[in-house]
Every structure is written in C-alpha cells, then in structure tokens.
Amino acid sequence: MNAVVKPELESRTASFLSRTHKLFINNEWVEPESGKAIDVINPATGKVFARAAAGGAADIDKAVRAARAAFESGPWPSMPPIERAQLIWKLADAVEAAADEIGYILSLDNGMPMMMAKFAGALGTARNLRYMAGWCGKIDGAVPTTAEPNKLAYTLKDPVGVVGAITPWNFPFAMEADKVGQAMASGCTLVLKPAELTPLGAILLARLVQEAGIPPGVINIVTGYGDPAGKALVEHPDVDKITFTGSTATGKWIVQAAAATLKRVTLELGGKSPTFIFPDADLERAIPGAAMSVFANAGQICVAGSRLYVHKKVFDQVVEGVSGMAKRLKVGPGLEPDSQMGPLISQRQLERVTGYIESGKTEGAQVVVGGGRRAGEGYFLNPTVLAQTHRSMKVMREEIFGPVVCAMPMDDDDLDRIAKIANDTTYGLSAYIWSRDVSIVHKLARKIKAGTVQVNGGVGLDPAVPFGGYKQSGWGRERGRDGIESLTETKAIGISL
Ligand code: ADP
Image (tube, rainbow, N blue to C red; front, side):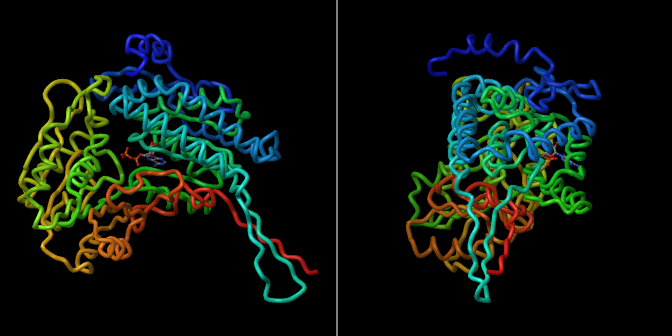
C-alpha cells in the first residue's frame, strides 16, 4: 500500500482484531444480553479471525429506545442543519484519516482486494458522506397553489423518525456509512444491523461516529444474526422505517413483517442485469467494462451485468476479450498487493455459485473459461464465462452473485425485441448499453425496465444519482434527492387567510 506498509498496519490493527467487539448503543460499548459472540471468518483462509457481539431482541430494543430518545429530545432535533452537516463532514474526515486501517480490515472481513477496500470502501465513502452533508440545509417543502383563493398551504419534509437499517456482506462499511449519512442528513436517528458475515466495518464506523462527536443515540449499531437481531428490528413497534439492502427473499419477508406496523420500507434487492454490446461500440472499453461489471468483488454485486448480449458481428471478439480478462485476472487473498479478485464470502456462497455453474453445464452451456475453484484454502472461484446459454436456463434466470457471466449472441437490430430480452426477468435493477449511436442508446434506455441504465461505462454508483430497482429488485430509491426524501414524511399545513 502507498505510504503504509503491511506490517505496520498489522500492528496498528492487532488490538482491534484481538478483542470481542461489543454493541454500540447511545455512544457506549455494551455487552449483548445473550453474552454470545459471532465468529468472524476470513474468506481467504476459512479461519476465524475476529469476534463480534451476537445481539438479539433485547439489545435491539435498547438501541431503538436510545434512537427514539435522541430523535425526540437532546441536541439532535433542534440542531441547525449546518451543524448537522458539519458533523457529517467530521465523520467523513475521520473515515478518510482511517482509510488504510479500514481497507485492511475490510479486506480481511469480506475478502475484497485491499486497494478496492481502501478506495471504494473508505475514500469513496468519505466522498459520499460529504455529498450527503450538502443536503442538510436543502430539504425544502413546497407552496402548492390552492384551489380556492384566500387560502395558503405549504408542505414540510419532516424526518421520518427512527430508521432501522439492515445491510448485506458484499460492501461492508460503505453500505452502512451510506445509510448513516442519509439518515443524518435527513434528521433521522438510526439503528443499524450489519450482516453477520462481515460485522467489522460497522464496528469501525461506530468508532468513527464516536470520534466525530455525533450525539449519543443518533447512530446505534447492533451486530447480530438476521434472526433474531434483524427480525427484531423489523418487528419493533417504535421503528418508523426500514431501509434494507440484501436478498430478494429476505426483502419479501421484511415486507410481510413490516405490514404489522405499516412501517415505511425501502428495499434494494437482487438483480439479473443485462449488458448489450452493439457492433459500433468502443470495444477497447466495452470488453473490460463488461468483464469487470461481473468479476469485480468476485461478482458479489447486485448490479452485476451477468447476462451479456453481444451483437453477432462482434460476438467472438467480445467473448474472447472477456475470457482473456477472466484468465488474466489475478485471483488471490485481498491482502496480497497484486490480487485483483478475492474469494467468495463463505463456503455456502461458494457451493451456491459452483452449483449454478454445474446446472449451466447440465442444461447445455459451454464453459469458455473458469468454472472451477482454486486449489488450497479459502473460498476462491476462478472467473467464469459461459456461452451457448439460453433464456430458459437457471443461470440466465436467477441471480448467481458470483464471478460468472453468461454470454449470448444478439442477431437482431430491432430495439423493441432487444428491450424485450432486457426485460425478460423478474428483476429490474440495472442495465448496461455499449454503443456510440445516440439514437440506439436513448431509445433503448427508455424501453428498459430497470432503475439504472449505464451507457458506455456510465457513472457508477454516484451519491447524487438515485439508486434502486424496478420489479423484484426493490422498492424506492436511495441516494440523491430521492434517497433523502425517502427518509421524510410530507406534512401539509393549510391556513385560511
Ligand atoms: P444472504 O442470504 O446473501 O446472506 P440476506 O438478505 O439474508 O442475504 O442478508 C442481508 C441482511 O439481512 C443481513 O444483515 C442479514 O442478517 C439480514 N437478515 C436475514 N434474515 C433476516 C430477517 N428475517 N429479518 C431481518 N433481517 C434479516
């Protein structure tokens, strides 16, 4: 790593990694009621390397009470927006200052390459927090023109209240900090339940929340399993809103459970996103773009472009290019400086993904490259390209969440038929178009039913750009104005003059 060498980081993080972490409630570190801990496994070795508290329903209740108290009284509800913004900036500064440690620990926790963890995980997060800080003083209502004269109406955007955030394991820290930034900017308080497989990012975040001087109870972090901790958060009667990122199956369960109290719910779920490469595309960019949209983070990305449709004129060239990249990618532990792709998160995930590859083979797909695990310890899988795939195959219909791309030739120039292919899925999270023809790009983008359409590389996950899905990819949007407003209630005030 740049200026900081690994042995130094090892000694700097040794005491953090050696203790059993507690829960962070009301800015204090507290033992879980159960007295139990989660063994955290390093996916590059399969061995336990840290321990975090296994919170349960009683701990969630304690955290929700703290968040409620901070929302109703204390400095938070009456703090001028500019001071809230300053606190978010302080948090961003603290994240930036700790970027090396965050990168190192995230790489152990999740397996991702350390540089990716540092740049996307920590420094990207600091940037997103600063963007969110800008919203604090800009959450405006409106003055509707009333139907009758001598009346005045205006709207206020009130913070929704206590937010329960539940996050997955694929981008620990970044995912959690995004939810923290949005909750703080909108004036809410938050109880966060990170994924049990990767609890350390959230614990690091709690330390930085404390360091930044954010008032007690505003951000509370309860590590624990989906059941009981996540479940208790969703079922808690004093939580106003759940913001969830994770699997579609758990999202469906959350909707049912939230119905009992009619909580507001935002869901960012799975995807089966298509990539379309047209013959006029800049292939020098399209080939690595298409490859890395699936191989980055070992394919454990909800927006993975896992269905690759390439115009028949350039199909062989693109498949060869993507397969070449797959072969050349250096797969290895995230802490090795030249690793470009780390392991999958768990043995279970490795089995799931290899199961999909096997099912593809059984259904007639051809493995162009990869297809197997790497020998030795850890949950490593070689990047895989499948060809001769068909829309009816399981690999084409279900989210794989691994480094597996299914390539198909496209021998059609009719955009309605191409859009039909894009929309031939229960998901609608993202789509990718590679073409230099503005007419194709804009027409097709309008026809695709997905929350995000990225063209020629697009903008990635920009904090200013709303993110979320159509269909079974979710409800609502995070980021940008939409994200902020999703954490507010609109109050209309009517006055007879
Ligand atoms: P995966 O199956 O890939 O682990 P999940 O959607 O189950 O993905 O996990 C995402 C997050 O949802 C994790 O923090 C997990 O603990 C949480 N979770 C799982 N089950 C539930 C549940 N019943 N209620 C609330 N949260 C849950």
